[in-house]
Amino acid sequence: SAQTETHGFQTEVSQLLKLVTHSLYSNKEIFLRELVSNAADAADKLRYKALESADLYEGDGQLRVRLSVDKDAGTLSIIDNGIGMTRDEVIEHLGTIAKSGTADFFSKLSGDAAKDSQLIGQFGVGFYSAFIVADKVTVRSRAAGYGADAGVEWVSAGEGDFTVTNIDKPERGTEIVLHLRDEEREFLDEWRLKQIITKYSDHISIPVEMWEAGTPEREEDGETIAATEGQWSAVNKATALWTLAKSEISDDDYKAFYKHVAHDWDDPLIWAHNKVEGKQEYTSLLYIPSRAPFDLWNRENQHGLKLYVQRVFIMDEAKQFLPQYLRFVKGLVDSNDLPLNVSREILQDSKVTQSLRSALTKRALSMLSKLAKDDAAYQTFWDQFGAVLKEGPAEDMANQEAIAKLLRFASTHSDEPTANVSLEQYVARMKAGQDKIYFIVADSFNAAKNSPHLELLRKKGIEVLLLSERIDEWLMSHLTEFDGKALVSVTRGDLGLDDLSDEEKAEQEKQEADSKPLLARFEASLGDKVKAVKVSHRLTDTPACIVADEHDMSSQMIKLMQAAGQ
Ligand code: ADP
Ligand code: MG
Image (tube, rainbow, N blue to C red; front, side):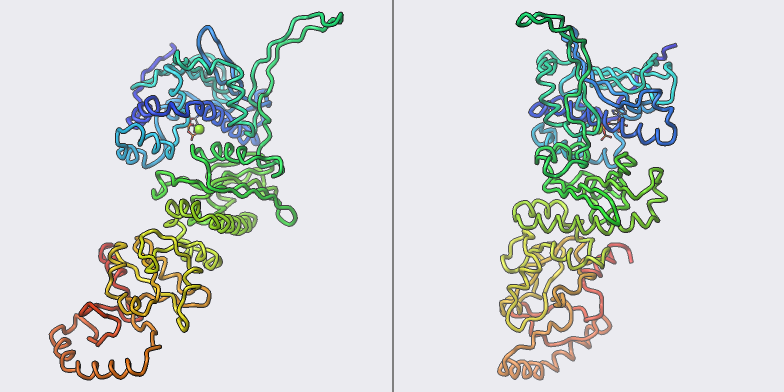
């Protein structure tokens, strides 16, 4: 039997579909980019699998995707001869969303179409974007390596459910038939389709072909011109972008390619494309996104570069090529030194991986320092990814100085919450005789800014960095020096502010002597709760404050430990 089954979409898919059909009109042509991108991915996957068993090609190794229009039926089909899907894979991939944290993400949607369509870009709708323009989608697929009878047909109107039926499909790969809504007939127009492909898919690695009709025999200026046959011909350049010379690639090409590799809808902030020859041979193309993915803080967040070996796609999300604190970097590396049969396990201990990782880390950092020359763009980056980069000084001692230069802080210089002060700027503003960089870590920006610990420094006009992110205590316990200057918490022991005048000193000594009986009474009544009670000269308005000893845990760290149940 054909075994037609009806399946309900995973709740999140239904939510996504509603959003897609109601709020993504403004940029609807991207559905074609998404479907062609999937076809290119399917070709990549097949090429990789075929490294081991070439029979998977079934005698057809010319991987491509075709666009075919039926004006009478009002359908546009996207037909690839890539890896295809089994029945189970169809149900899994076209009925659920595999990313962890998805349910959580959807619970954040407001129901306000305009706002949510912004959020959805961050999520990426992929295949489901077909429903922007189609009110019914039919997918026919047959996985490489299976017989014709392993074909499967998936049909849905993009509402609550879909059906799957077993079919015969002799050709390997996936065919997606979009039954276009009446108002979307522009996508039946060949010129329109060519224009979209050139715009978004010029440099994916497989040809996107359209049918070119033949011409009958005709007479021209007394000459007979022979009839030509119709044929499929590529409408895109179909050369993998990163293999081209930089001079041949426009900014728009880089941006379009980014959307394919990163599965992102927004433009990247910056990219770095490098070809390296010599001892190591590789090409890398790294991008910084302009927006954090919804699952940046999810521990199972998938990240890493796309790995190619000698232009053959090997794997997605190869995490080995960049440290964790650069997990927001997207892109690819194409190595000539790794074996084609490299596995994640081999990658892990490979010398080639080690040296690529160290080279790519430096490239990513230098790309960021280039971005930092543009204040507005860098602020966008920092607001999205700064907290991730702050893991750097602890994780990567070797590049600590370079990372430190990329950090941005709020400070008492402006007393504004925007983190836009670099350590280099701080150092340039240091007072004569000041040899330390002062900071405070507190629970919130206001708590930091209003801390009594700052009073003396404010009085002396010394700038203090104001830190209040969860990661900051961790960051500052690893970042102890910058440009030869110690970073010192103002809540710790001695601040080293002994450039006080003699007059002030005499006054202070008198105060200390006078206060001895009072201090003794405090110590007696506080007992074990404190190490010592001292006269402080760092306060100007507040009567008393608690300080940690030089070698003790800071009060912020104590709070963290308590929160962790220690
Ligand atoms: P993504 O491409 O980000 O994984 P999509 O929503 O675009 O997400 O696609 C979902 C999944 O469906 C893909 O990961 C892939 O497994 C499968 N898929 C989609 N289109 C094709 C295709 N043309 N050939 C084979 N598999 C496909
Ligand atoms: Mg996709």
